[in-house]
Image (cartoon, rainbow over all chains, first blue to last red; front, side):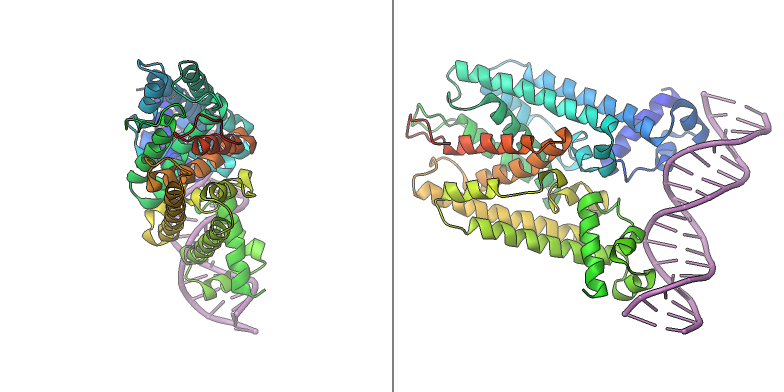
Amino acid sequence: MSTPERLIESTRELLWERGYVGTSPKAILERAGAGQGSMYHHFKGKHDLALAAIRRTAEELRATAEGVLAGPGTPYERIEAYLRRERDVLRGCPVGRLTMDPDVVASAELRAPVDETLDRIRERLAGIVEEGKEQGQFAPWLDGEEIAATILATVQGGYVLARASGSPAAFDTGVRGLLSLLASRSTTTDRPET
Amino acid sequence: MSTPERLIESTRELLWERGYVGTSPKAILERAGAGQGSMYHHFKGKHDLALAAIRRTAEELRATAEGVLAGPGTPYERIEAYLRRERDVLRGCPVGRLTMDPDVVASAELRAPVDETLDRIRERLAGIVEEGKEQGQFAPWLDGEEIAATILATVQGGYVLARASGSPAAFDTGVRGLLSLLASRSTTTDRPET
DNA sequence: GTCTATAAGGCGATAGAC
DNA sequence: GTCTATCGCCTTATAGAC
């Protein structure tokens, strides 16, 4: 792996673990096994390196989400697959966690990939919900955009609850609650399968 | 206001704005208008001062939540009041944001107030959902604990979406989606009031 | 390209005067 | 109780040798 590549990968790991404010160039260099000169040769500084790292992480998450959401099954099943997909819950969301970083939010450049990623996933989810409505799987009065925001928020908030309690269980509990709500339909009095 | 009091309040503000890693003793002292000697006389250090600040913030949030949840109205209405209560959405949750702080999560002492606060609110919400089930307002197959986790997660995740997009709108959209799901019942084909 | 050296300033904490 | 002085280390960045 090339030096700039190792620098970006080390930065990605550290941003995930400690955020932007908590990550120092020194720590990045140690992890990448590079000297200070290398970093300032390939990148303008911490901000520039973080930008490259964040962009890559954002793209990777978009691809992962799309991979699950484009899978087989009914709209409900695809949403369920997205909610239940394997996650390093206690590590938090590598993209979502950046929103709690003051320096990231303060920089339009650093925030952009974060915003675009969450927005893209939300749009994708909204379309799937609308699809489910057409098929009669979801109640007609539900709004695709709203439900999509609720789904994404439940995931992002699930990370918060899990990290607060120190256990992934809280994430799963919230997901089960959301799925039970999504499975409930006005047109039946039967208990939906869980 | 006494010096220790000003120190705690300044720390609370900075923890909310910048988190634990992003907050330096120097910044606290400047905001509190105190010298370094004062801080180390009243507190053992940054950790100790942050502990006092976090405990107070946690307690305040518990009181605010309890104030809304103990209000009048049906279970649904009380949950709606909780979800719609006035919030500084773009500032994020002063308690929840601490879960993204590596040093807070790494310290059992600092994490405890965060965990207890979210847990307490979740328990409260769970009870209200169960109440709603008894009254026939919520479908009998819904699980109180699960729905409570979903509600809390939607709120915590709503902050993330809002900060990512730089607008409180995303928070409100997620909340509306959750409310529309909670208002849907299996026993009616009528469109629920929104 | 990568290295070491150096810089000015901040970090978190301690010492000791007043 | 509060202050200033000092500590050793880290921070982000630049300079210049190799």
